[in-house]
Length: 158
Picture 1 (cartoon, rainbow, N blue to C red):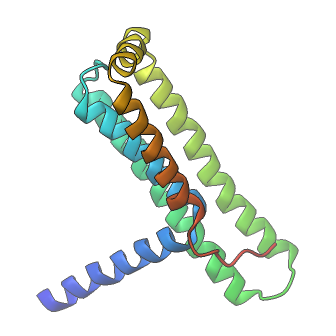
Picture 2 (tube, rainbow, N blue to C red):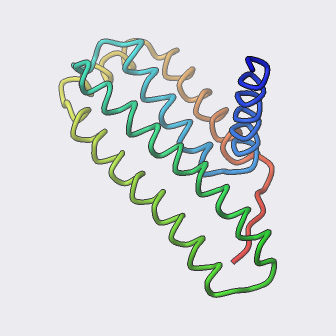
């Protein structure tokens, strides 16, 4: 019984990693969330309550979960309808639309919580006095672009 439970976790992680490997948009969501939580966790520039942290975690989980479900639905539709099909296209477009809606609202939640001009002033001050950290940030952004755009292309059909 425990072995079956562990297998189910292995399969779930295989699905997550396969999706990370093949889905550029998922890599974008993961990258943005990583930067956001790194800044919130490492620096004390932003004043964020536990409730606000919870909202940010839930919104990120919603977007990433939506992207995983969207990918599963796209693959299932491709398997069931290998050719061009208006109904299949609509199903895939609706699933993608659901991810877009959740991503838009996640961004709006992030703006509502993190729009703190004083925090951005502290950030600018920090980087102006720690130029080497600006170079480290730039290097991490370049590496992030490789992570985002260098994945294995997914199975994209209309």
